[in-house]
Image 1 (cartoon, helix red, strand yellow):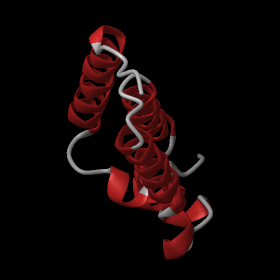
Image 2: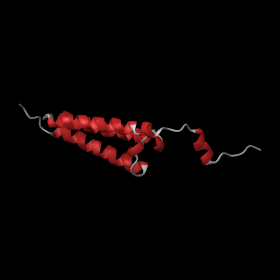
Image 3: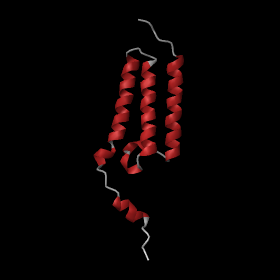
Length: 105
């Protein structure tokens, strides 16, 4: 009779992720957010929010597909709450980017 594996044994078989590597998705998202803020500061009120929305969608993709111990500080609450918040804010920013008038220099 085969022994059934417990969740602890299954978790031990998964390779351990170093702490610094678990923060790489967070760093990528924050870098994209920073780039979007710089673009907004340069008076591009259509491109900046679009870049920020893409960063939020990237965070949602990381949150959806990566295990909790691989996403570092992107895991704030339960997965469905994080996904709903990230996608909702991205949609709102895309709408904002669409309706915002472009300032002419």
